[in-house]
Length: 479
Picture 1 (cartoon, rainbow, N blue to C red):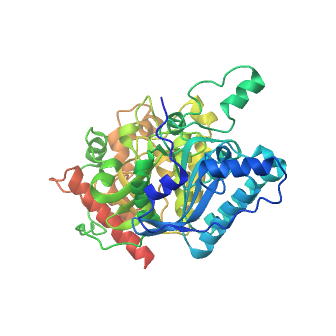
Picture 2 (cartoon, rainbow, N blue to C red):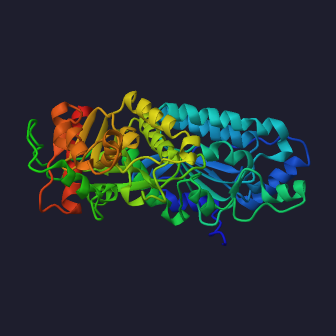
Picture 3 (cartoon, one colour):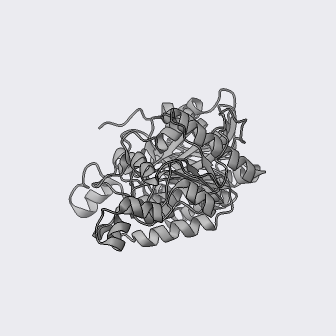
């Protein structure tokens, strides 16, 4: 697969920033401290690239929202980072932090500048320190990896984003393949350091052409920066506490297991706007049975972490990697001061040798521990099946909602029947005995609000009703 067009730094700035909003933060670079012939190299690089260094920094607006930017220029000594470039990056990040601005970085670099040796190499630490101070201030950091991004740049400021995307076909990797081949006498395996492979493995969130960056930044900052907006969806009057069920709970269990039952994707499709999907743990794991998104549910910005029942099958159960993705979403919400919404809809966590060795129990425990210690508004929604520890992992929010047909049980009712009766034939009886249904959970105080389900409901109407109630509850917690 070929790479997309190689954008210069100035072309990319013109593409992404609103016209007329560019404001450079760069001071002239003094090369007099360097000896020849390096000064000659720097002068030649500046003439070739049309920039005075390998990075340009400053501020501008993207669809009206202010951002600070750091953009690599690959034509300047392969985008390498020397001491002056590192100082420029760290200084820009710290200025953005002081001014309360999100940072958008676009990399295209071979890494540390070899002509400046170890002193340049260790400056990656200072850039990382500035970025972590920025993140600690609750400010967004968005990263766009261009072709190629390797070495110390990728191993520092290229890998610290809240959201990280790469351009199609980009070579992105820690060790440049030419260096690997020279050192080892054989080529690096083909396709490993390709943007598309890294997205598939959960290392980066997506592959995004540069032309789509303005829309991506718009969606991200629409959640990360913009305040809540007015609600537009109609709220259903919640089910009064003490309401008795008019049907056996087994009907709910069968309904929520049925094909076509509305799920988290319907909630996003019909009840949300400006959604930006994040994929993977950003540490090399990806499990699509859990979905993470920055979104606005009926006007309320939030991080959504939802169990996607449509991706959970006997062949692809919800494993420990999915829960690590869930914790990434939780940590993202906490760090950025965003509300967190979790959506429970699972037949249960993976039961296998791989899951045990992947710490499935520990990941359930760590999800629970993270949720109960969060300081941002949190709402969990039992949208359908709530089975076992996999459901419990996303349950303990400040406000727990359930759809009228939702349910929560320590095991599949068939499993409870086996434990108590020795067979699965008493599953319906066990479900009733264990009081797993939404109305029983409301009566017991384990659920705070039940959104009624109507006989005429379809995916759109139920999703809108649930989204409206989530927005109401988030608004009450914010107040």
